[in-house]
Length: 335
Image (tube, rainbow, N blue to C red; front, side, top):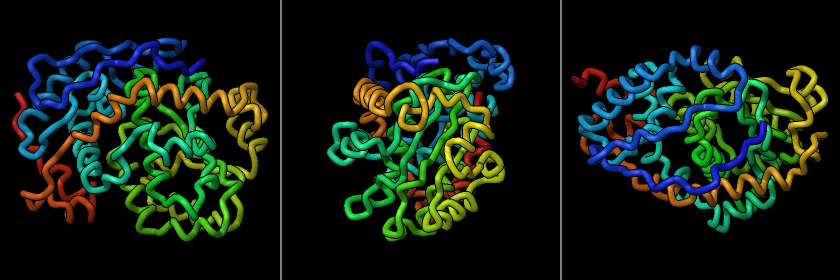
């Protein structure tokens, strides 16, 4: 199932909390034989979607600390679908997402494929999505983590590349509904990479993945792990939520990976035994980032105030992005 970008860029979304008109344009997920079953699992139907979009928009409009935020249907459906239309859980995730953007600007700023650092990482194939999707419609991403040169880059470059990829595809309705799984090829990781990774950094990233990432994570897999990288993988998994941890697995090589998970090896890059060269997957990723460039740069202007309320302080959010602020706005009256 080809993962093709749209033919023309979408308009730059409004960041007004209460725009004159709400953007309700959204594509229905298509190209999946069992899409009806997938939507049933998400508890999605037109009435539920309409009611929840209104509730989310009312919540944003009345939130005393959210200053600027997208309210278009494409954006809000990321959170609603990821949390199976639970308004409480979706609003908590959106709150954590906005707060993390403020606390860790280095992860979210300059999501620009023309940025020299990101462009170079894209050129060498640090990470990219595969052109084909699984039979269940999942988008599959590949990361060759060892390609992050520790003499030139740090852990924030890795985070920024992953967020660039996530944001470039998160408005895709099929990605929102079917979710995705991530493959980490660790074969090029060396002892030098330990200099750019710390337990604090891993914990901070895991908190975002656990609480603020609006994505249906269907699997997280590490392949070709050398002994020097085992501590890194083990530590990261230890910080993940129980739900995500259960979807994590380690494989000796891609032979074992494809066999154990019954993955069609043809969907992998040609260099991994598939049919399409890695360069073609990388090219499509760059084209998608170019297509969405203006929208990605607009995200930098989203804002939530973390400085004028104790529960929403940077200290509280950084200490526990799932505690502190999250839930402190639950009693907001939504008409």
